[in-house]
Image (cartoon, rainbow, N blue to C red; front, side, top):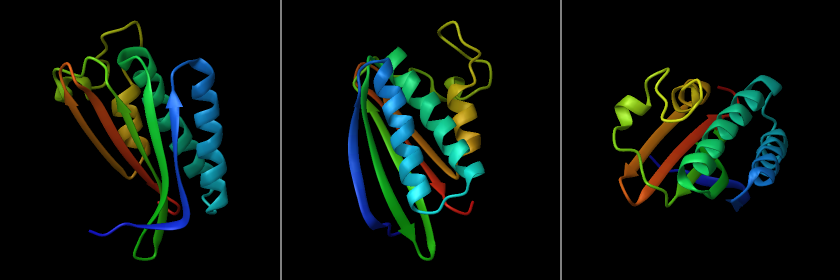
Amino acid sequence: MILRTAMMIKETLAIQQERDLVYCRNRVKEIAAKIGMGIVNQTKLITATSEIARNMLTYGGGGIVKIEVVTRGKMEGVQLIFEDKGPGIPDIPKAMQDGFTTGRTLGMGLPGAKRLVNEFAIQSLVGKGTTVKILKWKNG
């Protein structure tokens, strides 16, 4: 499967504090709107972005978000890759269950984010960090 960059939008944002979350959400919204993504899909993408970025800040000590507009055939969308160097997730299947949390939250972050996007992948190594990759198509 070949992804090619459309509109040449590709940037990396640091998430180190609360205000970075706000900037990240706003930037994702701007990019999604720029490619013509409808408001419902924008909202889904922004919500997933917020959940994952907050997890990265809370549990991973911060990290980076890579934002890119991609196309696959005639489809166009926004792909985000969240990377942290935190403690990692020892049991990904458990972390992907609704209601599971290691903090004082509802435990809806990762599984909720997965439901909001078209593609979702997570990799984590204990002691090394976690990478979450999401993709939301403009029309999907």
